Structures are given as C-alpha cells and as structure tokens.
Image 1 (tube, rainbow, N blue to C red):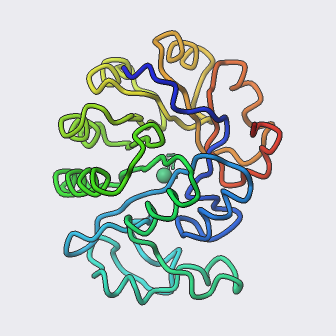
Image 2 (tube, protein in one colour):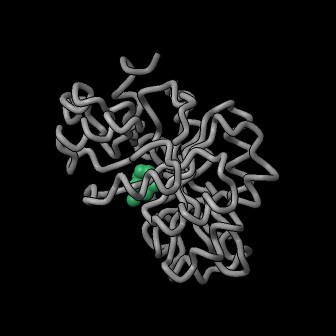
Length: 247
Ligand code: G3P
Ligand code: MG
C-alpha cells in the first residue's frame, strides 16, 4: 500500500463539477477550480481507432447532440459533436476533450487528477496500456494523480505496468473480498457509493490503512455521519455546497 498522503483535500469535483458546467468538459474542470477544489475526477473512455476521450456514457445521446455507441465513434466525429448544449445554451460549442487536452488543462490549473478508467470488459487490455502510456508521457507529478476503476482487472493491469501509481478501487457495494483486492494492487484508496457504505465498512477500510473516498453526494447533510466514520473526501458534482470543507 502507498503510504504517501497525496490527498490533502476533503472535496473532489465529480466529472469536473457536473452541476456547474457540462460534465467531463474543460469548462467543468475550470468551474471546479473556480469553486476552490484542488482535485477533480473525470472519466476516460476508449473510442474507435484507439482514441481516448473524456466521457462517461456508453452512448453519446445524453451529453451530446449526437447519438450512437461511444466505443464506435471516430475521433473526427467526436470533434464535431457539441457537448455543452444539453446542459445550457451558455455552453453551446463546448467540445468533448481528448485525454491529452484534459491532462494539459488540469496541469495548467495545478489540480490533482482522479482519472477513472471506463471500460467495456473486452477492452481492458486496449484501454489500460493506452492510458498508462499517455500518463507516462504527459503527466508530470505522480503525487497529484490517482487512477480509479470499478474494474479490478483494469487496476491489476495498471499495477503491472507501473507499480508507483496511486490506485483507487471503486465499488458501488463493497464486496467481501475488498481487502484482498486492495492489497494485491497496493491500492491507495477505496472509493465507494456513500449511499451503500456502512459505519462498520468505513471503519474496517480505515483500520486497514486505506484512504476512503465517497461518491457522489451533492448536499453536505447526506454525508454528515460519513465524516465521523472516517471518510477522507467526498466526490461531488457541486463543490460550492462543500465550500466550508475546502481548506
Ligand atoms: O469516481 C467516482 C464516480 O465517478 C464513479 O461513478 O458512474 O459517476 O463514473 P461514475
Ligand atoms: Mg467517474
């Protein structure tokens, strides 16, 4: 397990700051920074021709003016999509960032990055080496980077490629064998759904020495007890709601 305390904040923006600007866009990342957060979570998705974009959904429909399967879209087609109009007319013209564009933006704002690897089961061996290669070449500060995934196999592959990265295992419900999984990849943190977490689970995670992050709460009262249980940070769509928790 990594013992370096890289996460010196209690508030992390989710998909940038998804309630303040269109999710997973550069505007969303900038909105998070303006709200005072020092870390953002974004999702990376593999598309056609090995392209890597910042996007959450399996389909293009919800967050763009396009439609169809995200995995099959071509990079030049992505570049033509509008990813802001769904959110508000103020953001028409907003683009889906490539992974590289997002890394540049986040580093220029001096933020920490929680990069969540999205996956199609069959694609783990395609997306993980591609993401790790770009990070190797374009991300400078290892202590400002956390790589997360719901997919344990994806994190195992990250670990095989680079044992120094800070890995975060994501769960909705925490499974019985969570500790064995985290130990095997020398994880930095366990990131889970605040609504599924129990006090007993939280205390066990902390007793085992891991950071504990919870997603996605947008009102402080929803996680009042979680701080008492040992939760280290909240991942939120609206960091302005947690302004008093930002140092
Ligand atoms: O990393 C926390 C959170 O982003 C996981 O769920 O579906 O919002 O990517 P999701
Ligand atoms: Mg995510």
